[in-house]
Amino acid sequence: MASDLKSDTVGSVVRRTAARLDSDGVPTAKLDAELLVAHVLGVSRAGLAIERDRTLTRREQERVAELADRRAAREPLQYVVGEWGFRRLTLTVDERALIPRPETETVVERCLVLIASLDAPRVLDVGTGSGAIALAIADEHPGARVTGIDVSQDALSLARENAGRTGLEIELLQVDMLAGIPGSDWDLAVSNPPYVRPDEKAGLAPEVVEWEPHVALFDGGHTERLVRDAARALRPGAALVLESFDERARAVAELLRGMGFVDVAVTRDLAGRDRVVEGRRPT
Image 1 (cartoon, one colour):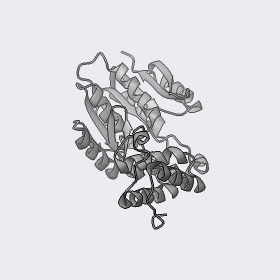
Image 2 (cartoon, rainbow, N blue to C red; image 1 turned 90 degrees about the vertical axis):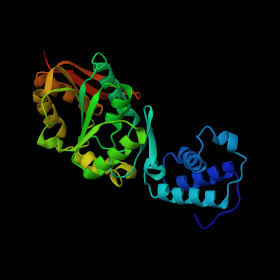
Image 3 (cartoon, one colour; image 1 turned 30 degrees about the horizontal axis):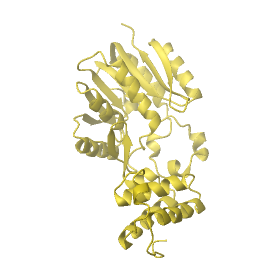
Image 4 (cartoon, one colour; image 1 turned 180 degrees about the vertical axis):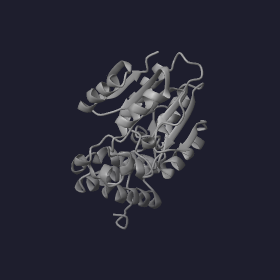
């Protein structure tokens, strides 16, 4: 595609790119084509309507074609454009960490509710990845003292880049969640742990299984270990918030109850699926 270019308008380039992506099996071809063209032009997707009759330069067309080649190979759109929005933040994203997803914004929302009454809560983000959860909490609760841990040095380097990009201060440490939660006086622990079963790998989209880091995807007992550690490491009255998925969320809620957590609740995401499990250590 990159070598077959002609002078064309925004509207024509979007249509041509969408057709190409559709032919390669990209399920959101039209949306992705619009976002790729908008990214190259430095405008919002809504701004494309204003630009629809503009003729792209040859270099702009080449750039769209280069990005479309990557997306056609089923590289996630977020990695292709190199950044993505998460709550009030725009974060750098690449294959070093999972893509921040809308359902995880619900996790942050529950965290903020649970620490709203505390002036300077100590918050631990377990498996911080890109830093999305940690940075969003630091952004929306300026008094929070947030620490993010991850086993992956690559993920931590990305989180540091995002801390610099957003101007937010968080502590980042290389710690394996399976080695236990560091410290014992947290007011809140939060995690989007690996919760995909290995036998579900075949059902994952190519964008997920071929590109996102498997260490952050596939469950190796992480949730159960995290709940057990949190029962020890959290202060009395402190909260634990976990992302889970649909039918598994209820099992995680029972796990929390079995470990003595109280006020256990399950919150649905914007799609109406059980997504966030929370509980408090008894006082």
